[in-house]
Length: 600
Image 1 (cartoon, helix red, strand yellow):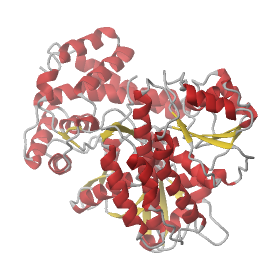
Image 2 (image 1 turned 180 degrees about the vertical axis):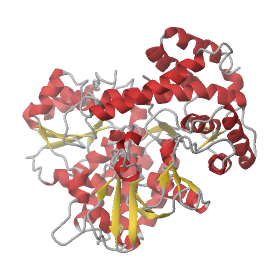
Image 3 (image 1 turned 135 degrees about the vertical axis):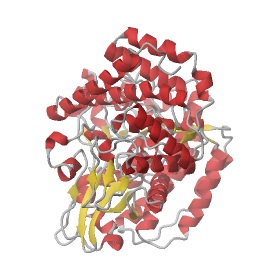
Image 4 (image 1 turned 90 degrees about the vertical axis):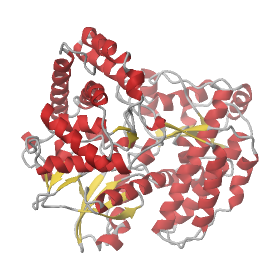
């Protein structure tokens, strides 16, 4: 099934450096405290992304080969300087004011940089509440004898390797590598000079390999370890720094699985660092928010991983199917000033952007009110009297359906995007729909989908006006209040998620709302007219017709893949996901069996 896609943003490194310098200058003037510490983490994230982009461009120029050169030390110098400051700030409880001299950017500014670079999303920082501070703690008890080599795996490993090097007070910048090849069979390709240097170090170096993961196969970690062992580094001198304690997933090779089981590994999980309560102190996450919430009165209640369903839908028969491993971290906090929801929004610029979007939607009266952003977590008031919407609660022309139209129209009018790469092309959506349909319903229906759609793509493309679509219009995401108002929960980041859809025309959300809220043709047409009125522009009926099989095929693929990932460990969750996938498959099949062309 085709569901996920790697998001790469094109940028000019000169402009990124200029922006980094300006932000560094402003940060150096901030007073001590959590906001300064959080801003430092944001600088580290962006410096690591810049280094990833520059080094990946050099990697591509060399024919997909990592090699020694001046760009490595120059690109990593800012990250290492920022990581050293992060260590000082963290160890002092954010109460110091360490500075980072702008000269750390000078070496990279002197290099001849490519015109444009591609920046990949550091997924742990963006989606999964992975904090650099966890790697500071993981490295605290690691005391290798010199010489020490820290190897980061690009992309997020660029920043994290700098943190490990700073934690051990190493002088040299880390080495970074980009394993390539098929997703479950990664390999490293090294240039001759790097090859020689590694062989010279092999007999005596202690080596840290740093990245997030491991994932389904652990092949990225495994590829780097393979490369080092093949050049003479003994397995017992490797130490892995992953983001969790688990083993590689079911696609791991026997060699990599066996190595992982006996290897030295160091990690620090989120719970022990940010949620553990001291004898007389609330956990760190609660303390971060005290200026907004007052002191915590109780332990944080974990609502992630689908646990929120137990709170808002007490009858388990009403629980929707969710991919529990991909939900954002979220916690309910009972504090002196009330009850609050703390939800991870992203570190650095990503969290700040989502905070601005949450405020904008709340001020328009379309989404729950938001109190603030505290080091990656949005702080919302808990709406205890709100209830998720029922699928059959919105007949055509109902006030609630009008509210859905106002919300979608607001997004269409006020949240436009100009970068085409922020969303899947129509060609990619069609390929996704064809592949998922073929796997679920057979090649005959998939072929009909392709033949109906391919000849219309050029005309349809002219109809697309990309916006920050909601992409999550399911019934349980709409909150009905006692006074009749309807608010859209979880409204800030699904256009920027870990999948291939991204930003689309608002017609995508109209189709999605129609599917998820059980609207018939009359109801969808009424909703589309309401959106048009608020948006101030017409919606293309042909584009809506094109999006319909694509939306169904995407949801089908998402639920089937989630079921495959979870059913062995969580059979009840797997069954819900399989059932939901089957519902989307039935609707898709019925749509494609119609005699008329799907989007003519």
